[in-house]
Image 1 (tube, rainbow, N blue to C red):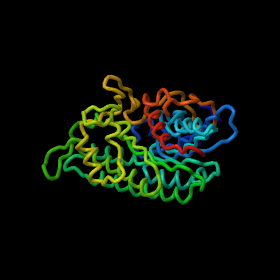
Image 2: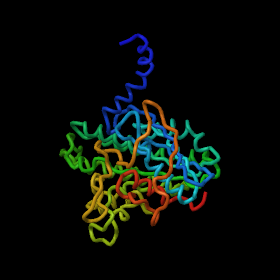
Image 3: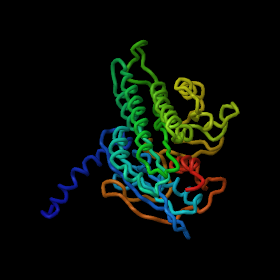
Image 4: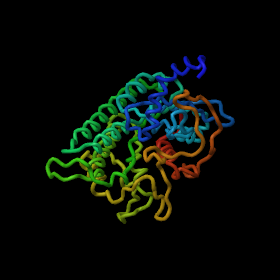
Length: 366
């Protein structure tokens, strides 16, 4: 190694080591984190006005693609921006301020609060956020590693931490977002690794002395997180994108109850926590499917989850976002019009589905 390279490597090591830890644990369940920030403008021909969509979150909004140096260009917030560009006939700047691997408190404190200036810009019209996925993943990893008597407290703690930080995030955004913001929105959690969790625990239940099916523990916990994201949204003037329903339920009526599965699984305003959890974890449990095989009809399906069994699939290229810094750029929209409010691939990739779901709440005018 030449001497002139040593200072550069020493400077990179503090950033490189935690990033490599994330690469070694693609599930993002480890405590290591990686900032992945992107600003991409949908540059629509013949327009002069430019508005901003700000999205805070973890690896989901980051468009994490198992790399520590880049991320999907068209992650869900930028997909939403493309829909907005057509709706408003304007340029839309999609600002993604995200940290892969971050638990909810980290997203709240070090992204939403610490980087509030991004949503305070006078051209901001949409503020979106998502969090809690890593709280759930870390609790799941802990639970799977337990022996002896199962400790359910790790799941309860994850749920409570999620609730507290989602509520705080909404209050902070309400108090700090630009006054002209038209839409504030939260996106809840899909259940990554649902099929893989169809197995028994190593630990035993305190009451029965028997092992428990992991799905039976994790599904109610994620349902509680998702309920409170949508319920707090209802209480605090936000909209809620129900990613669980959009990812985990088929786009047809698989059980003959007269409702499309992805609609039947959605949060409904007026639900209590108990009624929602019962509907998800018991009543409609048979309709839940792993998002690796999302059925858009009885005979056709698409894979919404990447090979790491955690992060959404995406269409198109990647941009720098991570160890080598972020990206600020622009480009023409992939699609300039949308038949029925949907692009041609709206239900074929995880990020496209989430981006379309976000877009269903887009305001008619800026």
